[in-house]
Length: 334
Ligand SMILES: NC(=O)c1ccc[n+]([C@@H]2O[C@H](COP(=O)([O-])OP(=O)(O)OC[C@H]3O[C@@H](n4cnc5c(N)ncnc54)[C@H](OP(=O)(O)O)[C@@H]3O)[C@@H](O)[C@H]2O)c1
Image 1 (cartoon, helix red, strand yellow):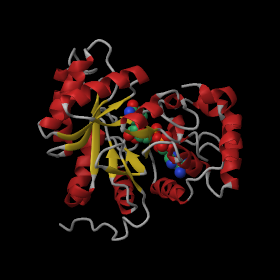
Image 2: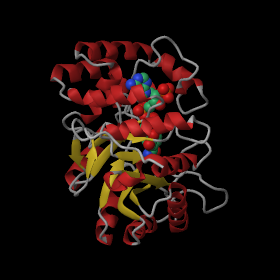
Image 3: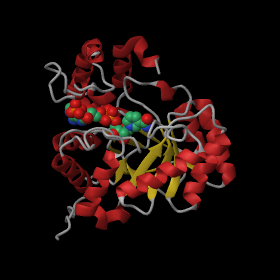
């Protein structure tokens, strides 16, 4: 069987950024497999998106135990595509996975116990056919489990060679402070935090990004396009194949509520010579922003469009103010 030959130009245009004070560089744009890679999605489309991403210099793929549907199937799809196409590039690829949300029934199938995290990581490795992942995240904080236990499970994952680095996601500022301290004491410094961050979701600006910067921890913004709201996807209504039309976390009501803001933002993007999606990606990656933007996609053309955002990451202070003024009070909401 012939393995996939990736483009020889794959490192020519992507920007790679240091993840905090670590040795690891991440592509400015990463690809997330939350949607459109599960068992119910078109396999050949998923395969085409992964191949094209890698050809464009996207070396980082973000997964979690529960991505699908059904839960676990995005990791299976990813493992299958590694086997078919990209496995021989394993050392050029950063794979992350997470555990924290509901994965299996009973008292050991979610949250932050050592029991759950390590069992879940073992399952993830099997589904992907990997010996190790590059980054293993605690997907959400668990107020009922001592944070020492959750962090020591991440430390164990790294010491046992099942993960190379540890990360946290969805932790608030105080929780992050504590997690970073514990991981440092354990000798496995936190590599990265994955918060929700976009023009519409500004919570991380309330102390989190500053804390990460001062602690030398990297950051990767999830849903930088607000699940597709910050694109032209809904310009002509809610198409049948769009995320908002499926029973998902993006509700049609939100599409309607954001309509005027989206139109105004698209005008600023056009004046910059960008699509709205490109401006939204550029905005999270702007000076003072995050290390990487983990975008999702349903088609290859979206990935191509988003990667082209890297041609212009500069914003004038007028543009930034204009964007904030369009959002008004919404800008300050987490
Ligand atoms: N840590 C966490 O708790 C957490 C939570 C959520 C997500 N994540 C991670 O973040 C990743 C990205 O999340 P997300 O998928 O919500 O990100 P997103 O980039 O904000 O939204 C992706 C969606 O936007 C639409 N889109 C993308 N590019 C477009 C373009 N150029 N033009 C028009 N529409 C475009 C597509 O929607 P259609 O499908 O409608 O075409 C696509 O599925 C996930 O895959 C996951 O890895 C992490």
